Length: 205
Image 1: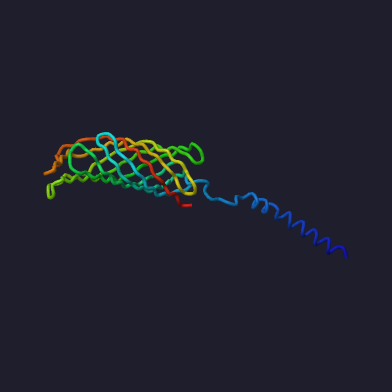
Image 2 (image 1 turned 90 degrees about the vertical axis):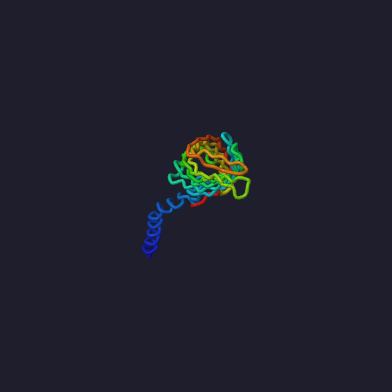
């Protein structure tokens, strides 16, 4: 009469021993695999304010989209900006830079990192003389830029950033007085320092 009970007990012990490794593996697996900070997200959208100081002064707003295609190693920024430019040529000038940056992040901790960056841009530049109907002097400039940035991961998916870049532009000589504007055939170059600060929203995981 004791044999059935012994068999049941032995079967129960064998079952527990058989499933013990799986239970241990399940207990050791992470319960929450969500990213630790916004830096663990592959994509981001940002808005920012920036300025130019150097060959001419300017202030403006911009937006960018980020894709960190090699996580914590390398990424790509696509940006578009609108600038109001104070320049020595006279009249009102608005510039619209559109371009990209390739960057490499350097972690200073889990929530702070530096970025080395560099890239190219095209600048659609519009100069309108004050006199209504007078000829304008619009041009497309091409630029190369490079610099460093500081990023701080804040609460949730938000990142505050501060960038500092030097930008070298090449475009045509232009003049614009109250009554006329002109674009010459000769090329000129300009160098500006560009500080940028803004807020980024990271997502993707």
